[in-house]
Structures are given as structure tokens and as C-alpha cells.
Length: 401
Image (cartoon, rainbow, N blue to C red; front, side):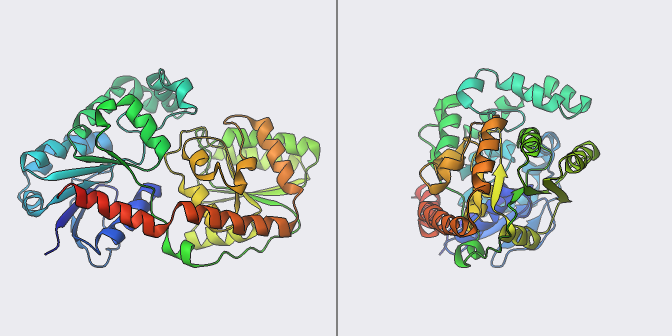
């Protein structure tokens, strides 16, 4: 008889990298365990999984945590937890951990960010420089958004301590890279015996399908971070100005969300520098993004965060697109010993980014295609699906033995 895992997530299985990882992990686990998914979102249900919709599992952390007492006393949830061998929390439903432990069940928490350390769930890079000013960084980042966000950070900066208190009661805590675990353990050394490192699974279609590249003579660069400060939008803007002044001919495609101010800025740069073609396509469907990768010479990823995993750069690598990324978080871990290493730059350094972009424009199309195939092979070797599956099952089995 298979053991039962109850997965509780307010985010569902579709959205960002964490949701993708959760979906792929469930696809692995359902081959070895019986799975019940309790989620706060109505969406397409995965095959072979019992799905339960629970409206109290909301995405806003404060409201979710305030709902926890009601959640813990609901007869239906109580029934599923009592039948479980393991309760798996891939997002933020931490307040139920003490209650689950009282029922004698094992708990696995899967961290995809720095929620037990940082109010914003992110750490600026390099960590060693920012480790003693995380609260100040959180307040600064929130104050760049709006007065409401700024006020919230000033009043609720202590919330990570609450998350930490709950997470410390878990049986296992999964981190998604060595760098991620290193930072978490530096801040919460009490977790040392419970932290497991498992790289996020890869989309099977990216693994199984050979990449198609349809590169044109004019270098085309893809940026997918939106106008997010922490994803380095401001750094790329500065780099565009320098490229424009130097007369470098290139095309830049911007996907994701941009406010009107950011759109006007990019439009102005497009008019100002005739050697640059700048196009904002906004949020696009996944199949459209894949088509953009076919024409992309490189992906520009100027993040200033300690990235925990970086699906964006992994995805680019598997699609044969060279990632031009800052040396932050797991980016160094995943690409530091690959052919892409020499196209990395220091976080926040737009002059270094410009130098790398110019170097890429000087490559031939055949060179780029060859590098793309080699990089794909190197990344696949590092993130072998069979190894990730084996490690995932091993961790879940270990706490019930």
C-alpha cells in the first residue's frame, strides 16, 4: 500500500517558478505515493491526484496566516491530515505546522525563497554585504513600490521571525540550491540537520525536444524580468544608453509587466538611438516565449538578488539561448563551470554588462548555435532529471522510515 502525501498550497500549480516546481514535483511523487492536493485556486487538476479546493487558502500571507486557526479546525481538512503520512508545504501555509505535528504527522517544507529571513522574501546580492541589513533592504525595496507597501514593511518587518518559528518545527526543509541552503543556514543554524538540497525539476518537453534556433543577422537580446528593480531593469536601461551612444546595432525584446513610465522610457530610448530596436511585447503565452527564444542571440538577466534557483536561466540554457547573467545566487552554481561563465558580470555593474553584450554581438551565428548546444548539454548533465527524481523520492521516503 502506498503512503499518502497531503500537499497544501495556496498558490496552486500555475504561475511562477515555485508553482512550476510544485507541479513537476507532484508529477514525480504521484508515481510513488498517493497524493491529495489541497489548494486555494481552482485550476486544471493534475491527473492521478485527488484535488480539494479550500477557499481559506488565500495568496495574501497575512490573511492566509490569520485564517490558519479556522483551517486547522475544519473537519474536512482534519480528515485529510489524519489520513496522511506526510504533509508537504511548498508555499506559505506554515501556521498549520504545529497543529499537524500534534496529530503526529511528518512535515516537509519546501522553500523557494527567503521568507523565514526576509519580509520581501528576497536577499540582495551579495549576501555577505547585505546580511546585517536585511530589514533595511526590505523597507527600501517596499518603499520603491508605494507608500502603502512602505508602511507595511515598517509595521510588519518582524513577520519572517514568525515564519521561522513555525518552520523550525518541520521534519525536513528543502532548499533549491547550495547557495540557497548556505544563506538559510547562516541565518537559521538550528535547521542544519533538517535541510535537504534538491534542484528543481525540469520541464520534460524542454529536456526531450532539441532546441530550434532561427537567428537573424542583427543580434536580438531577450529580457523577461519586467520593470522590476530587483530583476535589474534599471541596469539594462543604463546599458542600453551606453550601447546607443557607441552605435552598437542590436534588437531588444522586453516581455513581462511594465508600467506606463517604464514603457515611455523604453519608447524614448528607441527613438533616441536609431542603432537600437527596442520592442515591448508585455506578458506573453509560454509558446510565444519559446518562439522568441528561437530568434534570441542571448537572454539578458541582470538580477541583483541572491537567486535561489533561476528557472529563467535554466530554461534559456535548455533552449540553446546563451544567458548573460549577473553573478548572483544559484546562477554561479549552475553556470560557473559552463561555457556561459565568461558571459557573466558583477551584479549592478552596467559597464560590465555592456562589455559582455558587445562581445556577444561580435560572435558569428554558427558560434552561437554551437555554444547553445554545448551549454544545453552541460546544464542537463548538472540537472539530470533521473538524479533529481531519485533525490526527491529519497527525501520523502526518509522521514517515514
